[in-house]
Image (cartoon, rainbow, N blue to C red; front, side):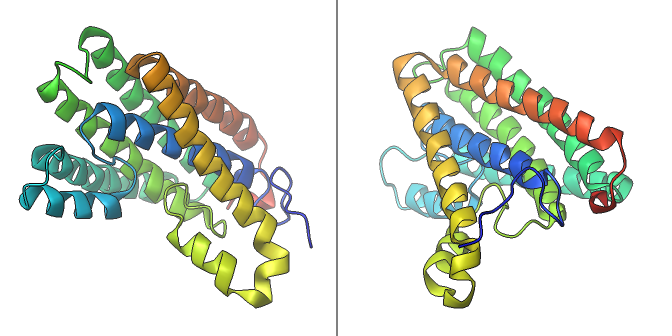
Length: 232
């Protein structure tokens, strides 16, 4: 079985490692949103569509407002990501760095709100605002991650990764370790996010998320400094 090289891939350089970090961040932010923001996803829009159905059907604990704001925020983020792609799409590290930088600013805004309002208990309106802002951030991340073109590393969607893992026998030996790493990274992000929110606070979850995003931004700044053939 070939071992994947996440930091010096022949076609993608160190982008796989960076996208793994963003996959961890996606698990973390969805843990925060599910636990603290009213049973809503901000990274996984497929789940949100289902949650809209639950809310319309009157299932307790699901907010139609939050789910719709998440969907709207994600669409806005995807549109902004498209504009960023038009401007910086010629260099993958530059595009991803700028996208994560904007994402960091948006998550920092979520953190500031969470400092002044206890989102889990008495901040329904504030929680909706945070949902929308975080969804914009994740929409931007999705568009930029898609442009990276690294197999299986979309940073938010694991359905096709799971299908490929069990069904694509021809590529199993070559890709199994990479796909295991992706699934494990998302799982780790969800676990860390849930533990931070439940044992400490929502603020702690946002702080951890912001640390990851800032670290990714710094790493991409270094990566983009010297042009490489795989940057395009």
